[in-house]
Length: 497
Figure 1 (spheres, one colour):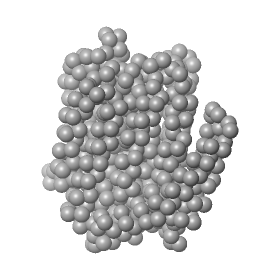
Figure 2: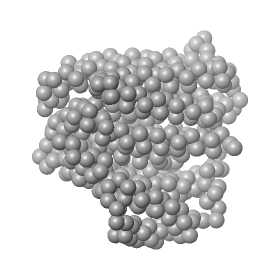
Figure 3: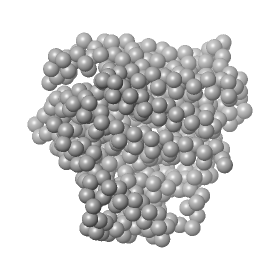
């Protein structure tokens, strides 16, 4: 079995844990913390989730090391790693200083919080801030395995630490510890995972690092690429990812918890899409090095895009037809929780984002071709527009209207990204959508008919009834897919050539 196949299996095992564990634990956590503390806890933990999901450091290492290894320049790779560690240590310290500078203003930002709620958030904020400063330099080294296309050991480490974090969460809550203990646990398991990955980098892969002969030219190239990567990540977070902070500022911690529940499912959906595309950056870099044409890159996008659509189709249809029932059961009757509103938020984020997630390889192509600057400048305007309008919409029209505006913002950004792919990178966007969504409509209609029939025919209610419907749909979905959507060569979708 190839490393990419093993990596894909481990990635999706990890995703099942990252998706399934929060779904199972959220009602348990909400019951022990209460709606207000749960909202504050989710605000703080969102910082770590976004940092973990971000490409900073790791993707920069993967991109440049893939180029060095592609040319057989091991000495250059060692000097590059030295520059990376030095630069990202400085960035981590800079984040720590900026975060501490923002700390005195937290009371003005979250003016809707009580003194007790603000005191708790201040403590969690400091913990996550220190964690972010530590993560940066270590995470840059974790990209060595990706550049070597060695995904098995990092996958095993990630699966193990995720499982340990889930078991630890249950134990801490049973023992009576609350949000501070949960954040400390998440930080601890995250640091252990990073240390294991760095150890594998030097011991298992025998990577070399050299701090001698630091090159200002290499530092400048890394800094420029990392700067645009950072701005791109910031833009992504400022769109759909910071809606819960805007809700917290304008509506308070309970509203933030409601919004975060919808955002949580959206985040899992986003991770599901990223589990496959992130494995292909080294191959895309090699395509660019050997001079692959924009048409070849478009065809690679189509192959991966169809795979993404097949993977995302099942949870999207399940959410559309069984999601309302799931949210009612999942959130329950906890005081202050609003399951229907959380479901509305989730749909508003997921439906438009699907069209962007199927073309995720366009992001990898932008990195490989050093086209981040154009992408960031165009989408940055959309982020500023999103933030400015969000405060007005959420304050005067409520959380539901904020979710609708977030959906509109996602569509605006998608249009801008397609303009970059077409004008800036020369990719055939029209061919991509035509070939990726070919036969998707009749496939979706038949699946919808099956879902509606299940809702009418299954007599059971509660979790068992929902589980039965999901099981039948999950068994039926591949059959419909293979009959109506898949082409004879879909088995080769994981190979980007």
